[in-house]
Image 1: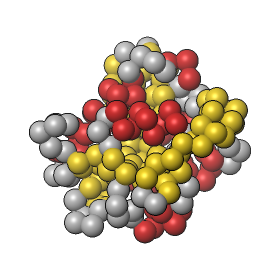
Image 2: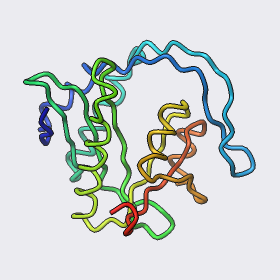
Image 3: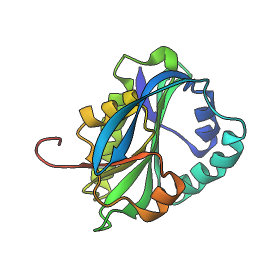
Image 4: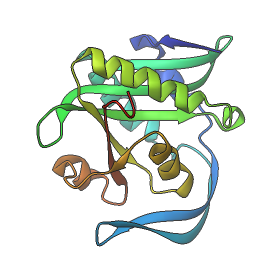
Amino acid sequence: MEIRPLTREQIEKVWTIDRSEIIKNIYRLQDGKLVLHPDFCDAPGWEEGEAEKYTPLLQQSFDRGGKFFGIFDGEKLAGAAVIDNVWLGSRRDLLQLSFLHVSNAYRGQRLGVRLFERCKEAAKLLGAKGLYVSATPSEHTVNFYQHLGCVVTSTPDPQLFAMEPDDIHMECIFNINNA
């Protein structure tokens, strides 16, 4: 499977990604520590209206220089990732990984890892010192990002935290250990 940059016209294809998932546990941040809680949810995929709400935001990100990547199985989009071109973090040296999803049928093939690594490369070329991730609190998602070197941030971005207070806000700082 091949990773390719997405064009502005291909942005709407991200809604063809099957993000359905059975969630058994979620993390909550308590006293600065991640605590796992049972919370069963059969998440069917995109909520009604998400494409209409978020497509314009993704297009705005593209227009201001965001980097969009898709991983393709032939012409079928199996996964996608986006880094926005807005500086975050206390030193304004992080870029947000604003989107990373892999279709259910393609999970377990390290496609998400490949997309994350491509986003790291692109962020470094833009001069970023790391990535900011606002992760859904599912056990699988948080563990995925931790495996890639992300840690819970001590200084969540106020605007993103206000929009996504239940998410786990993380950073992946680029250094010799996770270059």
